[in-house]
View 1: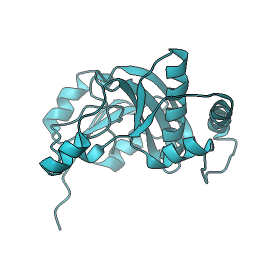
View 2: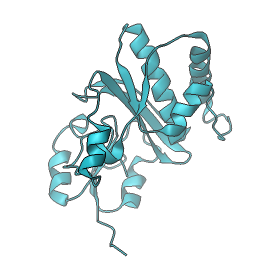
View 3: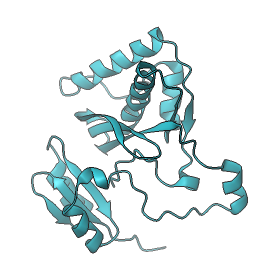
Length: 213
């Protein structure tokens, strides 16, 4: 078995800020902290450099990604369509603190962000991110496509239903209100936007990735 590579976690906003050498230590700083900002790095020097910078300069950046696919496979998949936006979600736990966002696929400029919500799941976040993206593009009369790395979320959007097993309670009421709004939007709006699965194995992490654990 190959040994798991060590990671270093930079926390820009949390109960304590700094660099932490384990996910559990990092998690302790971000749990129950609204608007927590954190990201993992391969080396201590990278984490230290990032701490001196801005969180949003590092979120969603691919770290010298090299695909393991063959040249023939890569050629068949092709390159991303940059006339697009990319959406993604991050959840610390399942359920746990969740947020989602959308970015310009080429520049990685953030177009919208929601959360964090106290009790959500990654699948819910991915679903809401796509619907938010659809509404965003419709509002701006844009012909761009949407990239997501979640097949589950794509299927939920097609069915116009967030098929989560998470149960509503007082802690996640705000999130479920948003889910109902998203489902209502899907049922009452017509859109021609194409939703496409991001090819992670060919292109690396989706540009909207939060760069978390």
